[in-house]
Length: 348
Image (cartoon, rainbow, N blue to C red; front, side, top):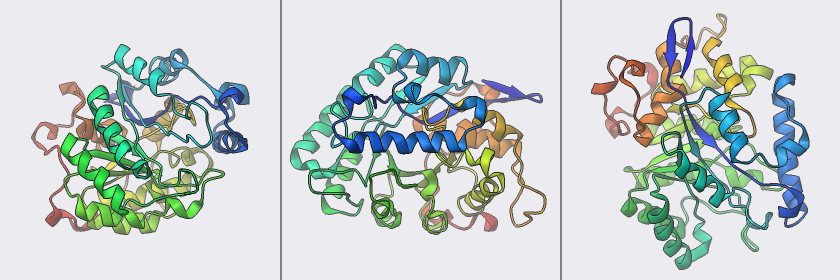
């Protein structure tokens, strides 16, 4: 729990990873390109005291994760959002067994999401069913730009993707997280386009589509989709550190998201270990939309509490102590808004 100026905040970091990008796990040059791109994001967007050495960045391990995210990081609960990237890394980029073991050791603090790739066909559907049973999955994380043999991307609207989403529906996997944000070398930028989210969200209204990185740099496209699709949510991974390097740009991102989506479909994410959560939480609690950006409403304490934890807690049914809930939280619905309520935030 984080406290500031007499206010207590329940923090859910909705996007963390436990990765291994050490040279012995790099399958080819693309494995190095990928982690080097991550490191460039890290060192260019972080305050100087928060910048890690390159060697630290390649692999953190569970003990350091628990310290960075919880002991020092003031987070109450976090959700693993792994990436396979099997074409680039021998054992994959996200470390499934290590992350799952950590989740079992700390079930009150960690939720594990897994992944699927529709290009795995029937065998992948069987694996998804087995993974759902083993991990008790409530969500998955998808990389539509991941490479797979000769393929360099896929779409949520693909026929095989629909078969996987249908199985998610059958298995009760309601939270579909999709990387739709800045490209990462060597992945193709256009494979992260947000247009396919619109198609899938319209056809699977009982699933929540959490667009990680809120579509950046396609923020406007994402907002126009999300305002008409009440089951589309915004994840703030990668957007958050602009609070340091480009505060007015961050104000624009938050202002647009609150205007179009409202305050109930935006979730804080540090994207650990891209960044550690503590400084992001502290900066966000202190942050306010500049007074001259009059087209945007101020960020109230209630909005900040929702973004920093209460919205993600609703998606994942994470227990929130009563004193940390907002006054009306116990009476609000836990699912997405009804389609008839998918109007502009300003009109509600």
